[in-house]
Length: 406
Ligand SMILES: [Zn+2]
Image (cartoon, rainbow, N blue to C red; front, top):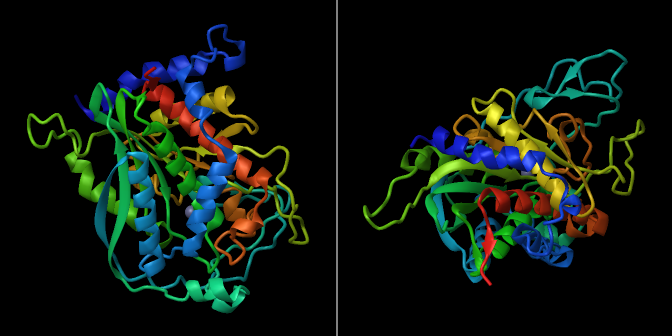
């Protein structure tokens, strides 16, 4: 069966999920809903602890010893969860020359009424914007220990990234891919970008790898490397493995090293939703009460229609299973590891903000900055990431037909 046919079979689940009432209104949605039990195993303190442990490797810039140590550490945790690990090797090319500065100077921070200013991915900016960029200045990191840890910058060359797989009980030859990039930049701790997404996927791998959890299809948890330098790890995965889908190897073994891809779900920057910058360039110090998880698909992708349905299925899973924050759907997914997948398989990303309209307009002052540290974020920030985890776990557990053996 072609990959598209497999996906259409999964559509019945999607549409049924969209029409279902919230869990609280269903007479049968009691404690024996296995999805609810699994989502209940997510824990704020545990999520925070995993983020904190990732920050011990500084900004985890690709091509450095601290990045390799982080890959080793993630792999050791995945093994301890009982998740079957593997690595993918690829080569990081030399960086492209920096783009020439834009003519005409920086745009005004305040967008005039009626002015249409385009952002990335097909988005549009509104209101107040703020300049963005990557900190490359070591002296901007005031913490000497962290500055020293982040000193190595790396050279082009061979790289590795790790993934692990839960094998499906009835349809091992099909899988959902759940990803996050584990590398960072900017001379901080890459706590939000992207220990927050990495820890979310690790926690899901832990919960779903528990021996009493069975899923019909396989689920692969991917920890992309070199996202910050051209999505190199995710692109290499697509190039090397798209052609291997669905092949039983060895023949007759029942083993599928690369199951058919059913969907790709990426997680990148999950904590900070403090709203638009103020006209003077300052920010609200608090998570805004209206904070939400932003689920995006890309309307220009070949698989956009299916990705859109998948995005709304995730929104519905949020309504059923998330504890505090809602989810919103947008159509301008961009600049993330799901991009190389989006023409081949329905692909979405989950974020704290929309990548084009919000992040691109400077809504997160810690993005790629020395201040992207664990101590920068409050429990209300971390809780937004936890709600994204509840959303994805609730959706994937339904899609993959998760059950609990008693
Ligand atoms: Zn990121």
